[in-house]
Image (cartoon, rainbow over all chains, first blue to last red; front, top):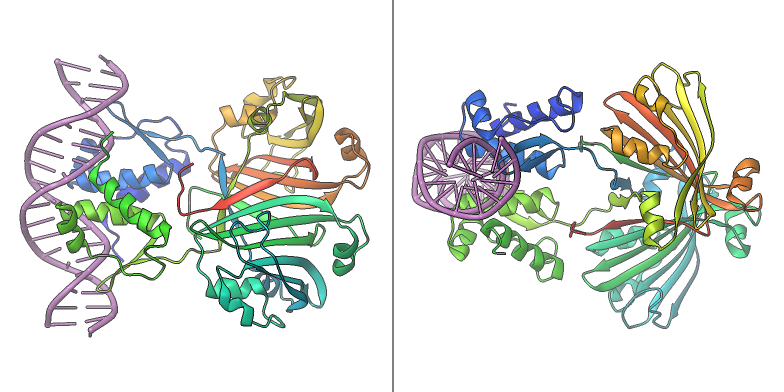
Length: 232
Length: 232
DNA sequence: TAGTGGTCTAGACCACATG
DNA sequence: ATGTGGTCTAGACCACTAC
């Protein structure tokens, strides 16, 4: 259970920063001072300070010293729920219903690159109540084996997550009023406010999939968090 | 311009991973092999591999070696736009209009803790067209000096960002239909789909502010990205 | 049990910004 | 000018675990 020394140094400083004992802008002890305090080599305190710097808690300036950084609001971590897991966590029964499946010509507006696309339309249910309608496109050039998969019970998203590695993703979140088919499939009146999530996924420069999901705004929301304590 | 050696090693491996030359699961060279390849000490390659590990690109297992990690779907980075900057980026003119300002009793549903709250209602404009209506609460116990601030031109958010350090934040995103006053202030018909963003901010356990913003769903969306390349 | 990463040392030289 | 962090070395011992 004995933590590495550099980790103990890091946590000690981190605790002082998060508690407010060392407010933003405060100068931290120099590496030389920390060497004495912890009776260790300079590389060891350097490792602790580097970790705090990488975490954004500390800023280091040559000749001036190390300082407690001001938190910046520029980004937060957004948890992307796996719908099946999320529904189960609520104690509800999850079901994916496939509605249609077709193969369409390449469309750069959906997925960059050439080759035909597999289109899968479906609805995610929680306790047999529609939670989200989904319209998904998958590059058959990037994922040829998906042509053989049946999506009667498993959703295309779950299958892709388990079988296809990706390196980059982008998410767009917006609000729209449910129209026609979407409203019908969600079993809500037209005009209902919906949370729209669009996700694009790539492996390197090759587009893999594009999906657009509509959630009933009253039933669903997304949560993002930011905290210097990254531990979950 | 000559990069540190550990940084060059890191980038070299990172490039091979991101390009797909080293797919997920691939075993990387051992530290000993990298020492030979780059003709350097072990601490130097260790620093490069540690950075990749901290970034989530590499997993290291004792006795087995270092491996290319599989990207995890669980979280993405959500860029939180500063509204004024975002509007300026679009080439539009930004303006904050304060509508009302009052002091209300403590309400744990808004901000945990005791003490009165300052409530500031206002509208963010882009080219004199309403972009978002904002309803903000600020703990006077946590930020007493805000009682003296005028919000005729600067928004409470911008003032807080510049003056009050925080350590934790939480964001909730949902879709709602604009009602009554919100629709009026947005200058949109009632029932318009709106993107709702609620943000709570803390310093340690002390709540600082709670804000609820409504954006016209047609005018605004949020974007999140995940990519092993964190540099923007 | 042998090879791997994890940690740590006691030095060194350098670049840099600030006092 | 000087003290600070940035980098790097050439070792060392240890813990863990896959072989």
